[in-house]
Length: 621
Image 1 (tube, one colour):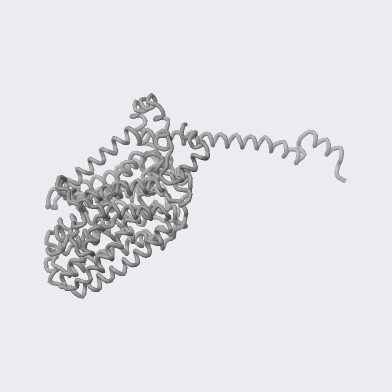
Image 2 (cartoon, helix red, strand yellow):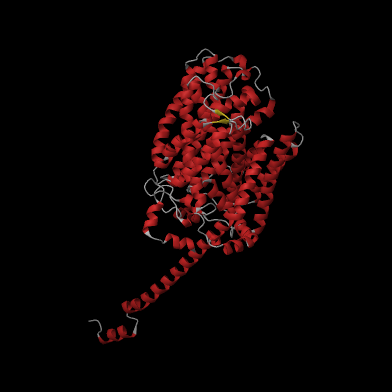
């Protein structure tokens, strides 16, 4: 392969490789299919067969842990423990979601019942955390959910998820960066749009250009490429300040509580609560970034479960307290959509407190941006290791131990989106991508526990597939029905079907694999419930967001069939050939060793002819 020749090229090229975002000719399309136009045309003609191969082929745990990591040329440094991960988790999650979307959803969809919305989305997120944790302990690599899906559901499903993972991070970072500008404006006694440039020719959701968001992202980029441990220390400081401010908001806010504001607890009914839950899921996005740090964790079996589950429980509790506080301070109809907590303090006569709140919100959002930058770069790094995107993105800098190319690329895309797009557009689209990925990870965990090729019998496999189809189908039916009507009739059918599907796996399908270090409890019930809740929440998201989601999916599919499929196919076949060659060489070495060992062993034991005659001539005295 040309890629191999490239790797073997001179030391000067390797030196260039390690200095930031430099590149060589073969760093982007080194695979055989792209070396000539003839090769490419031939590859395109083989698309159906190659696609079938990628759909049916599964990666191995060992492949992700050894071969894929080797693609980065340098190892990521193992510097993190469970304490780091808890603070990364808190820093990744508590940010724009709670400080901005709480007010927006309380005012438009849920009222004071927004606290229930946080409970629903928190339970869904916690179930997903359990699934992520088992995978992260078993397969501690930078690829996160992409690597997990590649092992259990195959390359194609993993690629679709990968495209949405990258979209999730870009949109999430852009949304937080724009919220950063809003709270900064509040800190400076200005309206949130005063620091934005108005472009009247653009649509309503895209005309407020945000240069401050771009500057903030550039600063985060510099921090993220310097050092993971350094980012962790900065995150400590920012998160501690953030926690102090949150405690201040809760204590000071509750001193101004008015229970009359809770008289209309759920003015928009159950639909409003679940609609808000779907959008507020945005507030929990970020914990999956912690799972991508498994490769840099000293003791994954201990540190990841404590870090992930611990940070999510703390976050959910804090969110509920903050939501209750906000709605007790102000009637839901008076809540400000852009900077709800700051304006709420001003409304109750504590104008000075809005500066404390704004400063704390800025600290929190800075942490979210920093942890997101670290996580998204590691996702792109591992995706590039498979060559689904150019391997240039997989390179890890030899000096800093960080994926510089991937970090700069992802944050550049984030800056462009943050410059143009409004928060409400970003939040809904982000929630679709996230809920979709979390559903796939829960399904992948069920597959991991109940199906192992060569171990599971065909009859057992068929039972498992039937039950899984029942779980997913009933969940989709429930979600669609919920999106169309307020009636409850169909749930009498769909809910029992989900229960029967889960019960069927529990009673009829034996587990084919047990976790080695840490496992999700109550399998299959918890992963199945995660699938059901995530898909149900998708039914509460608006139609326009699904159209944007479909458009993005179409774009990544076009890329996949013209580039990603052929690059990953060539890489997989080249890897297989190398493994076979290594196996053959090992057998030859064993045979050679046996040939060398046999005569010497014979001489030592006196079994060959010469030794035997000598022994006879000189008997022991």
